[in-house]
Image 1 (cartoon, rainbow, N blue to C red):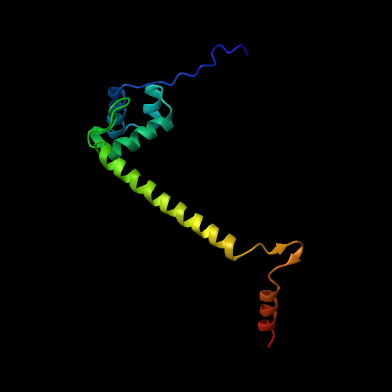
Image 2 (cartoon, rainbow, N blue to C red; image 1 turned 135 degrees about the vertical axis):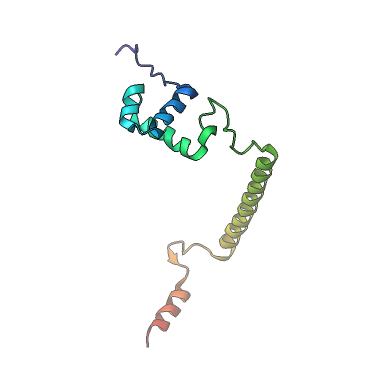
Length: 131
C-alpha cells in the first residue's frame, strides 16, 4: 500500500439532520428505514436516539458545545474537588510511608543469612495446634 486513501474521514452530521432522523423515528419509521434513507449506520442512529431520549430538544448542541440543560462548567468547584483529592492522596502516601518504615524497623525479613528468623512464632503456632 502506498498510503493513499488510508485517511479515514469521520462524517459530521448537521444538527438538523439528526433532529430530522429523530422526528422520522417518532413518526413510526423503523430505524432500518431511516438509516437507509439517510445512509447512516444503524449503530450511529441508535446512539443519536439515546441522546435524544435523555436530552430532548437540547440534544445535538454541535461540535465542542455543551447541551442547553447540561451542567455549566464550574471551574472553581472542579478545582476544589481536585485539591481535596490531592490532599487525600498525600495523606494516604504519608501513612503508607510511615507504615513501610515501621515494618522495616520492627519486622525484619524472614530469612537473614540463610537462617530462619521467626522460629519462635512458628514453634508456638505448632504447639497451639496440638490438642
